[in-house]
Length: 423
Image (spheres, rainbow, N blue to C red):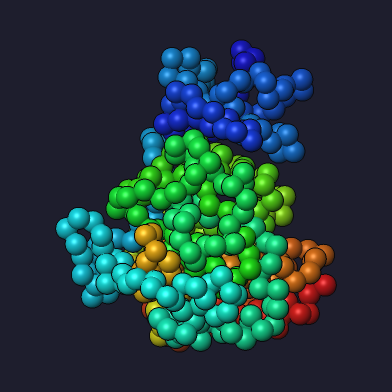
């Protein structure tokens, strides 16, 4: 380390993952954003390196607790943990859903067995959800018409689900996942991103299952950064974003949130610059306090840090009314999608209904995958712009939240028609 290097920013973390194909661990207390200077190499930081972005002229480096770097002029953050946007017990109660004392909350009424219904996933036919529990939701967003228009149904597009992991053995994901070498568990540092029991058990499985129902032939890339209780470290999220880019993901779903994080922002700078779409959940605070990185996406392309390559999504119910748990904001939400009682695969070969902005985000992520599979585009930003601008205006259903819930609710019919016009 050169002695008088200026530190541009910092977020706190509990562990370090190197920016390599096979992450390694070290005792790291802080994350530092450092300018890359002439003659610098990744090797100079050893296993303290989290991310190396030569095109951006910056790197993310871990600061070990027993080997601190000079912090003159640095701004410290006290946000030690990345908190997932969990579906809260309050949201469950508001929706009339029983809450168990063990922490099995918003999805407790949705449990049912797959029995013979799961076999339809592997045949490529309509799944049990499209003819059953989610039928009204799919009609609301125009899914059947869009799938008829997007005939490849997401084929060949990789969608990274950066979350709690998924149930890798669930029959719903047969032939739906990327190769084992492209999956990773950044919590346990292995290649098996399997969900573990806890407050958030099933969260990532549900999100991946929503994607699988909309973009039926897309490949899901499960990357585990959150534990069973839905919390994780910021460096793991940064490393997962880097991994997704390196492994060829075209869309990243982030149904998680934190406070402002310069390191996470830099990782997303790199991802979007390389043509990867990022879709984020706005949060479940039920107020105008949108979580990061969603609030950095802006209400439209020109306001957001990442332009039309990143979209923040909030939740509405089947009547296109803003969900009571949804976070909203005048300049912080790009669009909305259904996010209440969305049925999808759950661990242990089950089906479960979850509610939250976490469920709304993957609907938009999968929609982008449908379009990406069809053909190359001269400017990928046109797709991000189209999915927002061709959404259905729902301000009349939300008179007290005008301009605070984004452009409109996901409308796949209009989106598909607009994509046909793009070059």
